[in-house]
Amino acid sequence: MPLVVFQAPWSRQLKIISALSTLLLLAIPFVLIAKSQQSPSLLYSVAIALPPVILLLGAVFAIRGYTLANDCLQILRPGWRTSISLEGLQEVKVDPTAMQGSVRIFGNSGLFGYIGLFQNQQLGRYRAFVTDQEKAVVLYFPGKTLVITPDKPERMAELLRQRIR
Image (cartoon, rainbow, N blue to C red):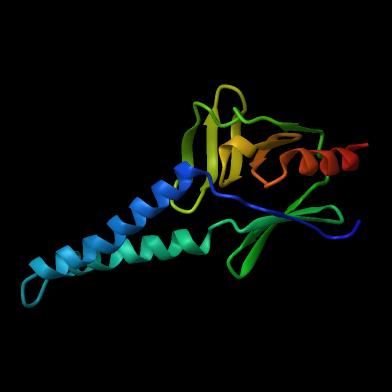
């Protein structure tokens, strides 16, 4: 199968959360520097450096899009990709409510995406590579569930279902 590329559109909520988080993470060091003493403690210096590091890590793990090629789903990141084998894929559903009531177990909940390990009543534990929850496509594998949000969820689901048959 030829390479198929999907964009990862950001929801309005994600844009607002990311913008506010970015402003806060950039403002904290300036406030701390303005209030620091001549030679701040190591802990104080770490507090100044930590917010920009968090911002940089969030940006590095941001989701730019998705590709389908051969038996692999690739999550496109800035400068790198996360590859997920489609072997064992059992079912695919488009479900805009898939992430409702989710609790983050490990990962990021709003700084450039909803990325990591989450859990809710509907899906149980699942991995998310999400930028717009309204476009959720749920992939069911034996023992694991994955949620992605391509710009054309129905088309992505159709192409994935073809791999199951």
